Image 1 (cartoon, rainbow, N blue to C red):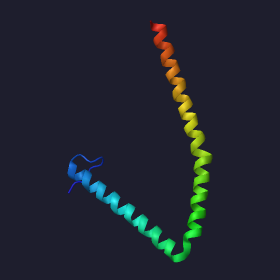
Image 2 (cartoon, helix red, strand yellow):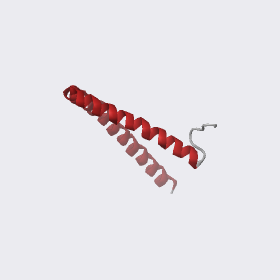
Image 3 (cartoon, rainbow, N blue to C red):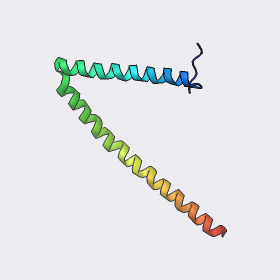
Image 4 (cartoon, rainbow, N blue to C red):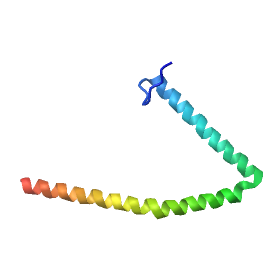
Amino acid sequence: MDFNFPPETFSDLLIVWGIMFVVMLVFWASGQILHAKGYGPQMERLADRMDAFKDRIFLPAGRWSISQGERLAGLRRREKREKQ
């Protein structure tokens, strides 16, 4: 079987979805097992640190990209007005 990515047929798409489902199921099950073994507080601390990192890095980057998009939109509007 020849595997193409991105999937070219519907059956290839179903295979990719199946693989993604199995991978996510493994991650979920491993989280449940770790939580049951008593690693819940450590996992919560890790999640808090990841959230803090996300807030520190990705929110300013998102604001910057939105401001750049607004700036480009303003340039396009100005170019349209100058052509008329």
